[in-house]
Image (tube, rainbow, N blue to C red; front, side, top):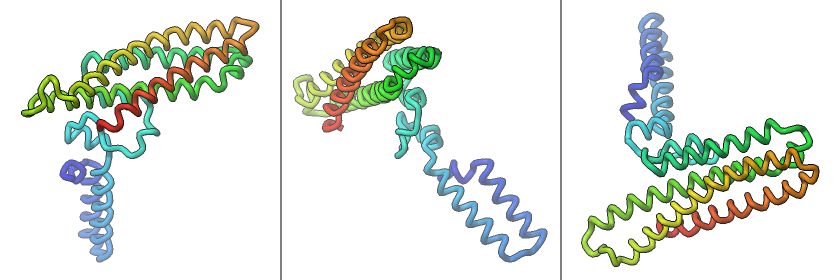
Length: 221
C-alpha cells in the first residue's frame, strides 16, 4: 500500500488536484481528488509486478496468469539452473513458432492446429518448473523441522516429484529441438499432411505428460 501510495503518477494526480483546489477554491475538487487518489492506490496495491518487486515474491499474486506469456511467467522462477533450462527450452519453442510462421501458405494451413498445441506445451512446461521450485522450497522447510527426517513420506514424495520435473524439463527441451526439424520436413515433404499429424500427435503426448505431472503435484500444494 505504501509503495502504491508513493508511486510518482499517483502522487502527481494528488498534487495537481490540491493545487487546483487552492487556485480555484472549488469545493468539489478536493473530495474528487482524494477519491481518485484512493482508487489509484487501491488498484496499484493489487498490481502483480509491484507486489513482486516490493514483497520479493517468487510468484506474484495474479489471477489472470493465462494472459501472460510463458517467457514472462518464467521470470518468476528464481535464478539458477532450472530457470536457465526453462529459458533455453522457451527459446527453442519460439524458434519452432517462428519456423511455422516463415513457412509457405500450404504448410501454415496444414500446421494450423500445431501453434495452439505449442503454446499449451510452453505454458505447462513453465507450470512444471514453478511447481518444482515450490517443492524444492518445501523440502528445505521440512528438513529443518523435527520429525521430517530423510525417511519422511512427504519428503520422499516431494523429492520424487522434483526428480520427475527435472527429467521432464530435459525431455521437453530435446523434443522442442526435434519439433523444429519436423516443421522443416513438413514444409518440404509432399506428404506433409501425414507428417503434420505425426507432429501434432507428438505435441499431444508432450502436453499429456506435462499435464499429468502438474496433476500429481497439485495435491501436495
